Image 1: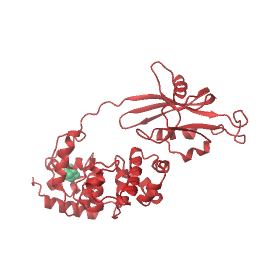
Image 2 (image 1 turned 180 degrees about the vertical axis):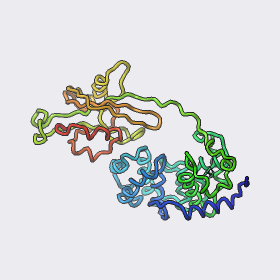
Image 3 (image 1 turned 90 degrees about the horizontal axis):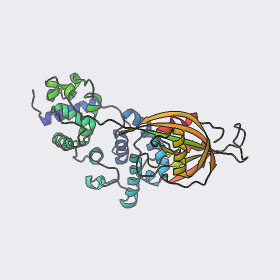
Length: 373
Ligand code: SF4
């Protein structure tokens, strides 16, 4: 087996990247803002998905100034469906800091950039190297997998204690004269050749340096620490319809339609800033209908009646799953008072489109009765 000869390794990898890299709308630009947006979107999200969002986002917010001036809700609406909404909130907050405190210039200094909200070691290294050619090795999941195979590392790649070891390996590899391309090449290799299943080693530009390949043990690495079982929570939510101006529920689309209540989640935390229908988890021994009434009373202080079961939807987050029973119901009494949500609005059904909702809500919104709300 050939011992890793770093200069030859770098040359082989960079030549391969120059020839075979995929066309991406965020490549071949030196615009730090666009590179940054792409790196934020690509975290924990597949390229194919990011492709659906990136250009729309850039068209709407072509510069950091445009993003800073935007309403958070407009940003979240464009991010709707991409998931991990903290990324969007942090990007927006960071853009405002850049405009207010840094003369609108994205820092070309690793430490200064790293201080911005949402910027971690990976994104700081990726943006600084790609946009400014700064010598920092970016280590994401793809890079860890490539390194684990190159060195036949048996340390679990999802173990926090392994981060330093992978970073040290990556630092040693980095092509100091072309860090941006080198980082992208390592990630591209992981995404297209050194894939999790069935890596195509025969066409890999660095297979002569790879310990796993040379000993036919590619399938043994990387190893992962066994994940804990993911809990599942049962929730009940209610779409509350309020009567129309005539004082009765509308009987047809022509009659005055009523409104439905939506609430906004706190800005910090899961799905922060998104809108949803009021509800919450089932308590021990409670039915979904009882939980729906109770949670509505507790979170928005309203009494409801005539609950009709609509559907059940399921959704998986990174660390837990939810199963949600959805009811339609009628407003009975009370003034909205919030306990949990930060905002609530009675809206007409056709206004739903203006608000960003979590994906789990989009699974049942098309099924809602449009007549009465
Ligand atoms: Fe990955 Fe195979 Fe290349 Fe090794 S030779 S880096 S296992 S694709």
